[in-house]
Amino acid sequence: MTAKILITGLMDKFFTQSLSLSLFTMPALVLTVRHGVNISAIVILILSIAVLIYRFQIKIELNTKEKILIFSLLVLPIVIALDVFLRDLNLRYLDYYLRFVLVIPIYLALRKTQTSIMPLTVGILMGSLGAGIFALYQYYYVINHALADYISLGHMIKINFGNISLLLGMMSLAGLILVKQVPYKYTFIAVSVLAFILGITGSIISGARGGWIAIPFFLSLFILYFPGKQNLKIFSALCIILGMLLIYYSNSYVNTRIDLAYNNTEAYFSNDTSNTTKSSTGTRLELWKAARIMIIEHPLLGVGSGQFEQALKDKIDAGEVKNIELYGHVHNESLQILVTTGIFGLLAYLALYGGSSYFFYSSLMTKHTDNTTYLSFLGLLTVGAYFIFGLTNYSFGHHVMILFFAIMVAIIAGMISSIESKINE
Image (tube, rainbow, N blue to C red):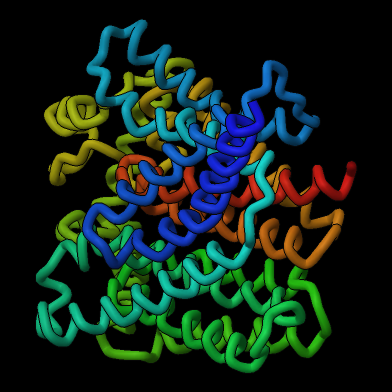
């Protein structure tokens, strides 16, 4: 009996420490290793299930904000599932949204496990450093400066690479919250700032201008809620402002991309719009126009998951929309959800962001420890960034984007709950 207890204890310790170390892999591998997000997700999920098995509880007690978080993760997949099953649509339209359900075991395992914060922190730094270096290598040695001729950067499309790289850069800068508790403080500061710069660099090289809209949000978050002395807050804000200037003035390609977006938007709303729909900005505006028409026609239930492309073709054939390239999504996440699943889907989508934001914001305001402040700040960065990314891109329509978001929310929230439960004991 004693041997069995000893073995069980050793196995529990092994799985707990392995789960803690595995948290490094998601931010570190997402941009630099092919299928890195899949490898990381599988490892973290398996270890989480193992921890839950060894710490099996008949009754799981959740506080109010934890219930809100889990509800927010479940409600959108439920709405999509009802839409798919009731309309007898292809199950693949539900596939990506099931990630929000699959990460719940990860959250439940982490909330009952005392994991170290350092593997996640180091993973974020390595991920941002790797993203910038990888993007520079791709730009100078693989695609030989001809970025405009390529739709992908690294192992994914440029938009997704740029958005995640930008987010990792901001998360690296947020690591300065931990500066008081880490050894080699000046080295840590230098690495954090370098990781921030290289994360920005990855975004610049991608040319993913839709993600740059999130920079004012990042700046506001750092100014309003970044803890610590005033000089550290000012330093962080200055880093972001310099990052904004770096993005615009770094090279002619970026400068042209931003100016082109402005000029194409202005041309679209002018009297002469004959060629504007050939640009990405003009196409997006025409897609949003088509979505508006469909929403007016199908406000409650939408046109159905995965049915936007056919509905768009019908609108083009009817002359209600200009003759643009057919897309399977609207290039705007909230519009995509609304046009395909109606008002019920939009409410579920807003609940996802609202519930997760509430969880992280309430933890940030309690200010228990530097660790909870850091994690809560990371959570708000992730949720806010993704919501803004969704204004010009259908992030949840891409496997890497939705899996990275779901896993990171579960990891960060689980670690916060673990620390808070220990404090409240």
